[in-house]
Length: 468
Image 1 (cartoon, helix red, strand yellow):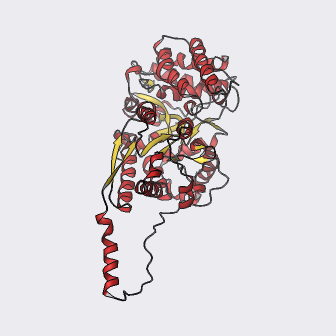
Image 2 (cartoon, rainbow, N blue to C red; image 1 turned 90 degrees about the vertical axis):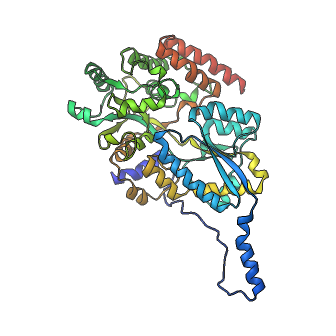
Image 3 (cartoon, rainbow, N blue to C red; image 1 turned 90 degrees about the horizontal axis):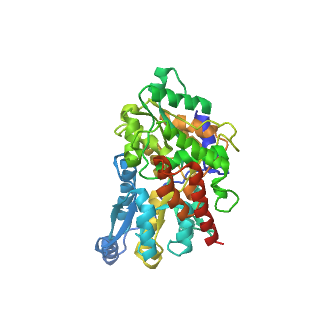
């Protein structure tokens, strides 16, 4: 398993080599030759210089983060530690932490603030396509010279989602993959193993339902939650690269194979494989259904592994949770081992910071203290977030001792390719249509897979025409 971890990092982040860690912080403390002060005047000058930071004029900056809720407390603790270090680095600085739900931040608050020209100084930023849109509009700080100055530009595994016209406008905090978490205790009691075929998976779902349990956790008030699984299904039937072709016109949402994926999701809804009333449930309820033992399976991102640690909501399932990829579907197109992976979640910085020397210093300190080997390893060990920076494989091997994470590593290693989530590939209008209207309409029975494909294709063609 330890050898497989090295392979994971090669596949997960598409890097040519994982040779070095990011290193710790390069503290630029004042240089001293150890020479005694020649005069009392020199000593007084030195004392005055030492006291100067305490008299610096106070100023405040805002950090918009999405580490809200009980299951994100470890992530919040990491951010708070970084905040403390930056405030100590920059005289007079006080950070205001503004916690907002990730979906609300991305689709409502940040969009409105960008349009009005008043985003927070530091904020949670989605990579593609958001960062490219905001960079094109001149709203984001160009981080390229800062990364060069700090010597960490080449320490990231993949900066493509945050790169526009050769410049870097955001930094990924970690990576993730998506698949099924399952209750191993229940499976063992049934004499089951993780399904090796799609038919076996469907038989397990039917048997769980017949056993009076909820086969899969469901919470579809926010459309992105059910779309994780739906995205994987249409990618199984139509190919892992199909979603990337929608925005170029090479593929269509109403393609028969895409519709097959949507139809399979609808079939599982109609068979009662998700908890009744899921359209009214928030993402937090999604997790609770699984941790309580009510639901036996939960399709989610690898970040969810943090829940199954001491002191977290899924503590009772430590050692009782497994992870598997969706098996190949009969007649599916392309690589049937592919799964969703990305490095799209990160931080961005307001372009206005370049106009204020103190704000710019704070941004540099934030990057120095947040994006380093120590914090990347803390994210992995404490929160289950896969590194977005290159870490020495030996160091990674030493730090992963969690059985569930080891199983996740094995699953990711077994996939031959990956694909990004749909919302990093299609335009915002298309994301809004499928996330806020179409997926809920499909689940609620107000539309069909065929009509859903037609509606999405119409919006897609309008979006494509707008950028021609």
